[in-house]
Amino acid sequence: MKTQTPIFSFSPIVLSVPGRHVNLEMKVSAPSTGNNLPVILLSHGHGNSNFLSSYRGYGPMVDFFASNGFVVIQPTHQNSKALKLSPSLPEAPLFWSSRANDMKFILDNIDKIISAVPGLSGRVDKGKVSAIGHSLGGYTMGMLAGMEVTDPATGKKVNFAEPRLKARVLIGAPGGPEGLNASAGQRFPVLAGTDYTTMDLPALIVNGDKDKNPMFSDLDNWREDAYHLSPGPKDLFTVFGAEHIFGGISGYDALETSDENPERVDFVCQTILSYLRSALDPKDNSWEETKKALNNVAGAKGRIDSK
Image 1 (tube, rainbow, N blue to C red):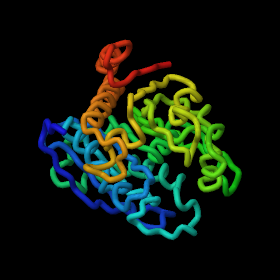
Image 2 (image 1 turned 180 degrees about the vertical axis):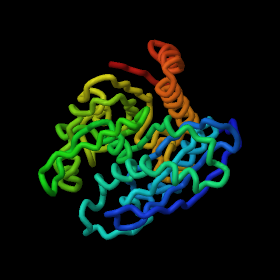
Image 3 (image 1 turned 60 degrees about the vertical axis):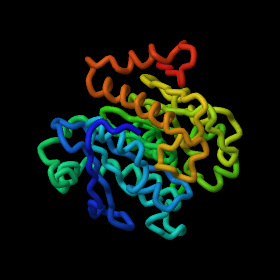
Image 4 (image 1 turned 30 degrees about the vertical axis):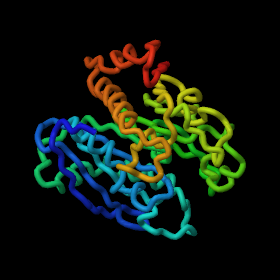
């Protein structure tokens, strides 16, 4: 992927979080030059790999957004296999509420995190923070957008809505409980307690029209439920031909990428970038221009729906 601006990464930044089984480890990536830099919090997925689901993963996306002027903060959530936490711990293996709390903790401590990175203090616009999540990270984004979850351990509904975020992007997020396979509901009972009807904060839902996994659902496009079941304002970006890794967003040359396609990765990142630019600056028309370039255009690689 073409790099527009030299970038650097700094890791690990390690902070103690009350109630967490291990310290929170993060990586921060940023352009080497520039000021008033907006921030992206990037939430990794679950997956079977040891390190892609950690702050070490998602290199293609991190490099793209850092080279386009963003500071990218990547936490390692407690579901990461890199941490080797016991599967008998409460909320294992997904640690779903811990993941949302990680994102809130980063927002609460963003000054401390930025100041820990050499050469970054004074260069960041901490009033312009967005968040992107893939797969289980998309589920985390749904919670930050107001999606309520019924805690399978207590039966209580919880809401992690985070209005401090200026934009939220859900990539390949799990769909609603109606389309969830019984076996998946048994393995991951929290997914059966998803309620997208409460997800009322603005968000972009990114779905691959070939992202179908019978281990979770037999339905086509189950992973676009977050758009159809939630109230507006929402946008749905459908990527034609994309499977769950969208050409390889989780890592360079990753074996788990069933649809490896660097051009698709770039297309997905460029489109999300246009959404973020318009979300961060109401005068920016990048998102409307992207819609015009895709919708009802022969040979387009995707489509955008809005409500």
